[in-house]
Length: 154
Image (cartoon, rainbow, N blue to C red):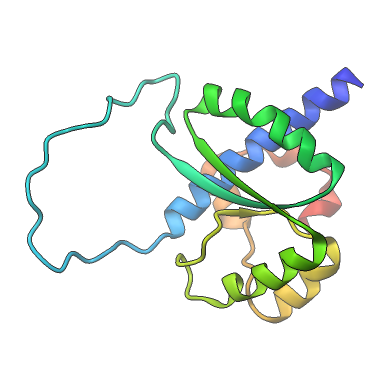
């Protein structure tokens, strides 16, 4: 049981970091409308043990038992990575109703960085062209997906 929790934790942390990196790389750069004004540095310098310090990600999860486990692990994840995680938890029906409009907006302008969805919805999301293959991102990142079941990547 402890080994399974440990593997689940490692998988969650790896997934969140990978998705954060991917979404950061996909974000559109804002074009300033007026010249930038020199600002005084107000954030602490990045430390090597928390390379993602100052990053915030927004996650949408369903009200299922594994969501409770994810929420239990978030303080440890945030402490170890420096990533602040905002979690919104909705029922199955409410999640779908809120998620579809978010997936329909322009790339990079939705409210969520990470979503955990029911496998029943994936076919519709693919058909609507809301999902992209992650093969190139995984290869570029050097991430080792061998900890996951191979059929999860099909």
